[in-house]
Length: 435
Ligand code: NAI
Image (cartoon, rainbow, N blue to C red; front, top):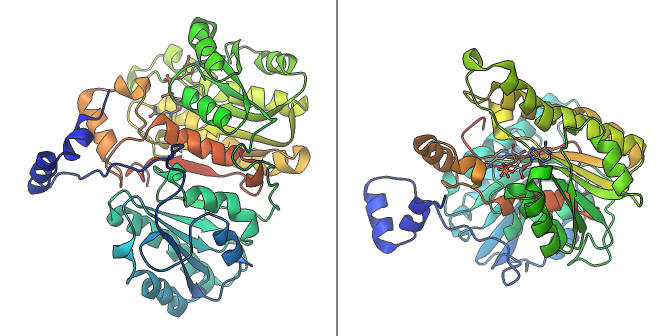
């Protein structure tokens, strides 16, 4: 279902009327396309305190954006050296004069230190303070601009993350705190096709977000396997054929799904995207077991089983990536979704618990995307008023598109993203739900 309000506010009379009525003013977001691969304008590099992250300038100069103060499309504020309230004031001093000049659909990325870097509680307090700062700025900045915080120790390890956040690919990612480790990046031979020679499997890939993920991973060079239930086989084949991949008709809840995937992929798998998901909404008082069970089976139990099987069998090769799909409903809770919320919070729990071991023992990273309101068949079925509220109640005042989740998945699947592990990244335009 198209967002007619967004189209209306893009017209002059629509803008005039909605401004007069004090209604939300969603900006048309500027997303990646083959003709629009980069932000337009300069990258302004600012510092608060004494940086602790190594050669950030070298990394920033590889983002493709010219470094300069005029007409910034993006600002990177290195606040890794903020250690007390006085150096925190440098964050204000650095950004206060430039915020207004950041272009529409521009980016502000604040860099902070990991919270466990030492036990100086003054430093910990002001490093935490950066989260409140970033989330507040994200809520007020408007015009399609995003604000995110990256906690890092080494600029080089965070290059793929900075490239993503400083590009049109991250249009619907705002208000996030992303931790990046120190794993040296594995740079792909071909930057335009970073997944060339790799195989990616997307569950629930026949439509919606999964279809967009398959498309985006194929764009990045992956051979895609589009897995979906046998009833959706025609759609799965259509998607796979268009992308030069193959379809796999399989119900992911089958007890032996992992073994069957392993048998289909004797040469191994590099990227596994757990995207298949269902809802069976009802308040708990009215929810029979047959609405609880299937949601937990599809959204959580099958994710646990197939992850275990594909790691144990070594199907997921070293350098592999698993991206699971949580939901902001799982992080914030949502009336009528005790089953769905439980399943999606479970996915986030799995990611946090297993990620360190998956990397140490198998060389595979494990992260989750947590979509907010994304325009798909699933959300088109939501009653009108709840749908309108879902769309508007975020800092960008609009729903996201499947491609926004897909681009976030592609960043996490990137060979150079090995330092990003155990993260749950919301793709929600900084939704007020659980923010
Ligand atoms: P969708 O309903 O459009 O597509 C889901 C796909 O998964 C379908 O092709 C379906 O056939 C497949 N599927 C369902 N059960 C399966 C099974 N047992 N085995 C294999 N495939 C199965 O859903 P949408 O909107 O594209 O969502 C994709 C994922 O994103 C889901 O995990 C959903 O929970 C999550 N999500 C979606 C949000 C949204 O706003 N659309 C918000 C938050 C999370």
